[in-house]
Length: 218
Image (cartoon, rainbow, N blue to C red; front, top):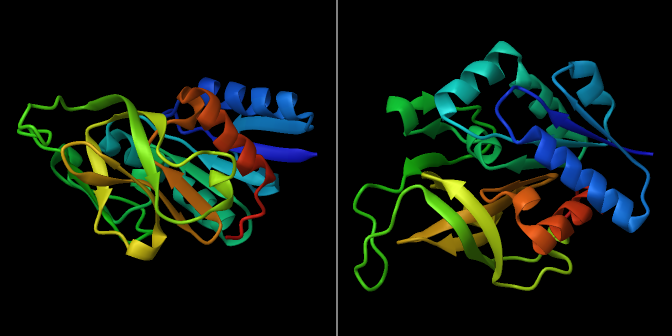
């Protein structure tokens, strides 16, 4: 049985992510047990781990530290596939500008920056922040999680902050919103998305299905 643990620190679309994973498993005929938990033992016994997140990074990091989620993620990164989503991706970085500046987990090199209040498109039209809605993702490298997903597919985003200053060889997908920003990155057995695959219809479900089959290698 394929065991998937979704880390519950009170700051993610846990129900949506769990239902999406269960749907993908059902459609593909897989036997998958999905657990939503903050219990380190349950995270440790899973075959795959999902690290979601929504909301302000200050509140997310406070709960991550209170529940020692960082240790759970670090342990998982050593031995099994990990999928980080939205603020889960940002929490892996070193520092975020949000809430006056917040130290993150520092598992990956990178900074989290604000889009700004004067963001414009190529025609000079003002862009709203947060960036909310569908946007194309341009794949930068091949990766098992891109299998069956056409380049420039559209995924669903909701965010005011983006990841920057990362190692270029870890960037697997980029998007444009007034500027180019990192949409996905990968490092060894971790794959992280700024968009929400659980809200991204067919392509998002395909990515989750690929995650269920991924052995953590590139």
